[in-house]
Length: 497
Image (cartoon, rainbow, N blue to C red):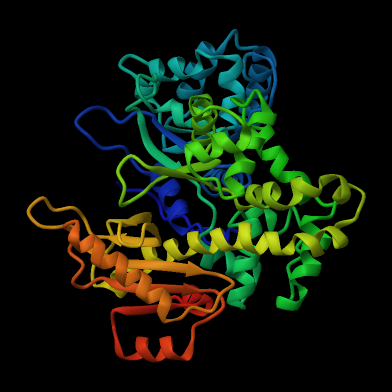
């Protein structure tokens, strides 16, 4: 592509792949049978993940233009955009633009001679008051448009996931136009521990269960306050997350309020509270909030489009899905803070936390440790199982003889091949506060045998125990001599090998 080599600034932690992708798009020469012309990139991701930080650094390093939109009328937005162009070019731009037709055409004509990024951040603010803006960009990028002879690399960025996801989907005007589609995700759990400066794996799990991998929570929202050790975890929770004077205290509420498609906050909070309480199926959520199942389909879809929850299929029961809250801080708020909000607001955090800590361990840390264990299976799969997992999730196996269901917390499957039975690489159970022993492996073995009767290939299935509180000596001895028994504790979870 002929892109320039632009070093990632030292102030940016990790984000190596994201930086490489941005630089390649922003500085590369477009290739193909037709003319080069302008390029379009779309950058999205939940709030506080560092998108703006990345894009500002990109424009500084490559000599590009960065414009952050605000909530404003179309006329004011055009005026602010004109001022940004003037500051960048150091030339007076004819003002005001009559509308975005003039502004976008001018933008593309103004950037010629070399590829250069032009970032419009918080794009949903603009498209909300100017719904035709995506169509205008599409037209100018098309045949005969001003983008045909431009070297601009236009990057549209935003945190409203439902809006940004819709830019390139279905029959949207910009579908098929983007040369870059980058979703900036939270840091992965090992990277998050390094970012927070935590080298105690058990402490890393506890902290990640509250703040996840969101970069902004490390410094902006806690002023750099991180727990100094496992003994400092409870005091840290009290002085930061449960402290009404800290920004992190109300953050979970703001995350929901910032989503433009959410018009009945009470209903959405109740849905999230249901999931945080362990009601993860459609029926369970509906029963918890006192609604019929068909009445919660829309709020579930909105929360999913907003990237606040994820729909996860049961790998062994077709048509059955479970819902999981994606942002750990929201789970913590719904399961812990919301129940005692009045006390917390008047600085009674220490008393409230002492009675809520067990709820935190059961409803927040336990399910979160399951999610981390599935991430471990994805990232370590090939080394552990001899093959890269095609699918990692959870599921339930019916046991007719026992008249029960065996819950599989971490199921690792090979790719489907219609010429042979599907291989199950691993079946795993997760326990945070319980020492795991042979009876856990026996339950997994029972599930393995039942799945074999259903036609799965389980001959090399690894039975995995993910234990936050360790394992019995007998189980450790068995795992030492049987390669099909895998034991994963927090130390193994965080060890990159």
